[in-house]
Amino acid sequence: IPEEYGGIGADERTAIIMAEELTDLGLSGMALNFAMHSEIVTNYLLKFGTEEQKQSFLPRLASAEFIGALAMTEPSAGSDMQAIRTTAHRDGDDFVLAGQKVFISNGQHADLVIVAAKTDKDAGARGISLFLVEADRVGFRRGRNLDKIGLHSADTSELFFDDIRIPSTNLLGQEGDGFKMMMQELPWERLQIAVVAVAASEAALRWTADYVKQRHAFGQALGKLQHIRFRLAELKTEIQLARVFVDRCAELLLQRSLDVEAAAMAKYWTTDLQCKVMDECVQFHGGYGFMREYPIARAYTDARAKRIYGGANEIMKELISRTL
Image (cartoon, rainbow, N blue to C red; front, side):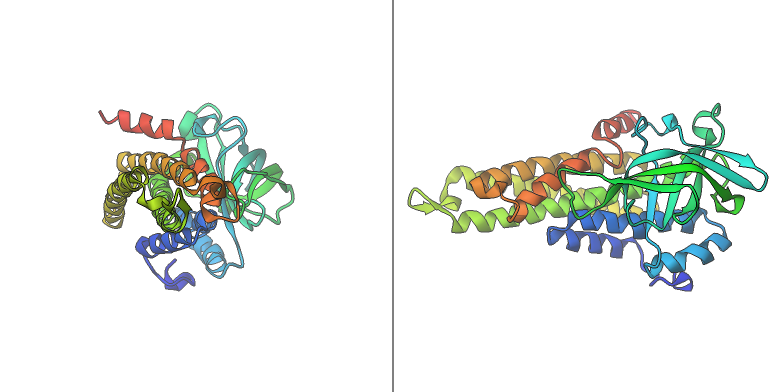
């Protein structure tokens, strides 16, 4: 966020470093929910908001007086955003918003939610608009804090909008441009997932290398066994290849030339790799790898969601295939 709105004026490189360092401590859930607030919600306001909207919301987001969330996913619409059923229709100078969302990061804590809704049911993607919804508006309800198998540090919620009246000044961007805006922002969101996936893989490899040097079986350290040494060598190589590609994507982002295809490749490849790395590292920890007191166990359950959110990896392959 620029200094004029209460931020420090840093670029995405700083956000990437923050995400990597939090993840290195085993806090991948915190890293991603932090990014939802500071790198996704604020970016929508910076790029598409009016000056009045920026002056109103960005200083409060920068100071954490407000926590931000993005509400896109619905019970019947995940990766297919054109299938959303939440609607917003004009009523005088207001819009009336009705519908529900699910799997919303920061949903339990959010003070400001960017909500995707259909303003024209017959216009397909061109009928989706985005709205800035304050949590204290009449008709806003939070559902359950969803019980996930991993990412326990990150609240993920149901949200309900019961005919909320929203002033037209809370429309973000132009009416009908919501889908286009979301598509523009998804490459950065997907790169952040890839950044965390690589950093988590690097941390898991380090934890496991340290463990097998200390753990003894059959009269020697596990790390002396050729199978384990070779497999860790292979994982280190694969992780390094992922690191180089993700760093290249970060360079492209800073040059404002990261495209949908590269971001999709980074997201799909690194999250698939992370799940493989975590599985093997748990195996090399033996029974201790299944105990939540060990960071590898928590990282193992945290990893799986990354292949789903930000667009399922099957969708990433579909996006890549369209460029062939």
